[in-house]
Length: 175
Image (cartoon, rainbow, N blue to C red):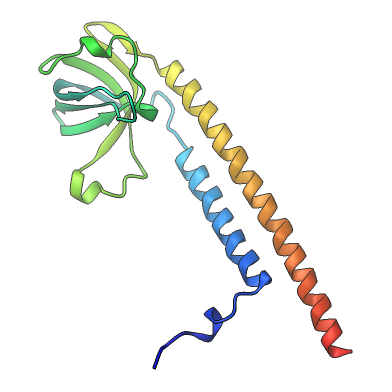
């Protein structure tokens, strides 16, 4: 005997539109949550020694493992970008950076905390400037937000159409 709940037996246009709306609402929520970045003054200030480096390129991420008074953590470049000057950084070099905790890291219990670099200074030279990161992140997130809004609008329209169709079918059945 196979157990299947009744509500999942028949997928209707209205239920599919409802699922699509819930998906679009969740995407919008994740978009809003992920785009909430702290100001420069609130970012975590780190002064430490580089333990390990991986420069990205060809689909690889760019990150540094940096040891500081707070521990050893992974600090990633936004979107894996390799900034000019990063190639000169070597293990055991001292760096200063401003970082934001990766709020969406689902593997934090396994891999430990990870952070995104907002500003990186090596040998008193600014490698990654806060303003450049802010402009790049805001531009990308504006695009993501536009798509999330589009999906949300489309799902509301589809849900409205499905609901009106369901009402008209109910009226036909009663007559």
